[in-house]
Every structure is written in structure tokens, then in C-alpha cells.
Amino acid sequence: MTVADDLRPFLDLIQSTRSPIADTTPESLRATYSALGLPGGVEMAVVEDRAIPGPDGDDLPVRVYRPSADAERPPVVVYLHGGGWTIGDLDTHDEPCRALAAGTGAVVAAVGYRLAPEHPFPAAVDDAYTAVCYVSEHADDLGVDASRLVVAGDSAGGNLSAVVSLMARDRSGPAIAFQFLIYPAVDFDLTSGRWTSLEENATGYFLHLETMRWFADHYGGADRLVAEPYAAPIRAADHSGLPPAHVIVAGYDPLRDEGLAYAEILREAGVPVTVANHEQQIHGYWHFVPHLESSRRAREADVGVLAAAIDALPVV
Image (tube, rainbow, N blue to C red; front, side):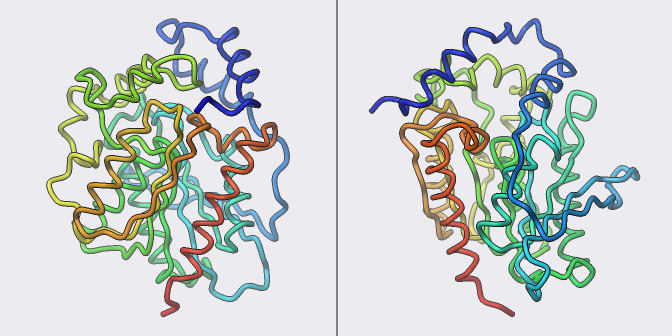
């Protein structure tokens, strides 16, 4: 099976304009990523920017999307954005968060966690866990149902969602009802050949293996991170007792195989897991929806799965 037809011109354009990652700084890549900001987005009843106490004593930005002003105690999704722990922010992921809120009826609380290399591992992890704790503890103020708290994220954000789920289990809270992992990075083994998709999709499909290594270097170094379960959640000694999960992968993504393996590890540990493999998509397709029909269909299917999973959660 080949990559979706409407992705090919996009990939050709990206390939013709990209600069060697070795010549790129975090600041310049952040600017490029921000310039790709998605147009528009679904109208919300309320969008509110908040500043909550961060683990380092500084404010941690959180953007709250409320799709309906009439919903009483809706579920809540804490969303952790992608970008290799180095780029991305609340604005780069504004459109997907609006789509997620509209498609599920949940309040979405997006987290602007600290970025590497200025703030390497475990800063992003600490921020993500702090935000989830805040949402759970301030559910009344937010007007949400903490018993239906979901963690979700794409790529690096999928990693953080998986890690926060481990941390919440290990620290006896807060209670997380579901984890929604969108093409997550769950390992830092980038050299051994353990993951076939790293080599199959190393170049030409938006996320390159050399870029993954660049992100890892800035986040703390792959050699160190691969031994840290709160960086590489697939390396945790025990995966039992974690929240039910939906793991999403793309066929032409270097991260495909580790995502599929993580789903299987969760399943073997007794965690209820479902998997979606969008075989013709690439890493990052959630961002291409305004322009590409195949990506729109894939993301709509993903959001539908989360909507059904949330609907099935018991109201306490």
C-alpha cells in the first residue's frame, strides 16, 4: 500500500524546501513551525487562557476550550502538544484542540509545557503531570467531571500522555480514565534496528530519523533517555493498572512500530487497548486536515473513537 495520493505533492514540497536539521536551531525551527499555523478552526462557546502554578514556581499556561456553554459537568481532556519536546505551543495546536473538543463534547485543557533545550527532561514531564493534577483538583472551578479525565497528545505529547499515566499510577493519582495516544514516541532506541519502521520511513515522510535524533539530543540525549521509563514509557518494568488506551499509528511514520509494540505491551499487562493504523498516512497528519482530504478522514475516525470511549465512561 502506498502513501495517500493527496499526500504526495505535499511531501514533495516539504522535501524540496527543508534545510538540513544539523544547520537548524531550536529558535528557527520554532518560528518555521509557528508559521505553519493552521487556519481557522471550529468555533467554541468559550476559549480561556489561564496561568496555573508550575512545578518550577513560574506560571504554566493552559488554554481551556469549552465547546458548549450549556453542558453540565462535561468530561475533560488534558491535551499535550507534539513537537519533539522542543517546538510547538498552544497556538500551533489550536485547530486540533478545537476539533477534539467539538468532536467529543469534552472540555479540552491544552498545556503549554516548557521546551528543551532550555528546559530538558524532565521539565516537560513535570509540567504535564502538574497540569493533570491541577485539572483534577480544580474540576469544580473548571466546571468539568474529574471522574472522566482523559489524557491525550500527539507525538511528543503522546509520549507525555503515556508517561503521565504511569506517574499517576505510581503516585496513586490523579485518576485518569483514558489515554489517547496519537502517533506517540514511546522509546529512544534510535540506533539498534529494533524498530523496522525507523529505517523504512527514515526519510521522505515529513518526520525524518535524523530529526528525531536532533530532538532527542535537545531533550536529554537518547543514550540517557532510553533508560528512563518516564522518558521512554515502553521501558517501564510494569504496565499493569494503567488506564485504558487507544493507540494511533501511521503507516509511513518512523514511530509506527514502537507505537504498535506499546499497544501490545499494554494489552499483555491487562490494560484494555484499541489500535488504529492509518496505513496511508504519515506522522503529523492531524495537522494536515484543513488541506488534505485523506488526513481529514483519518482524524475524524480518530476523534470518533475518543468520543465513543468518553461516552462509555461511567458518570460518578
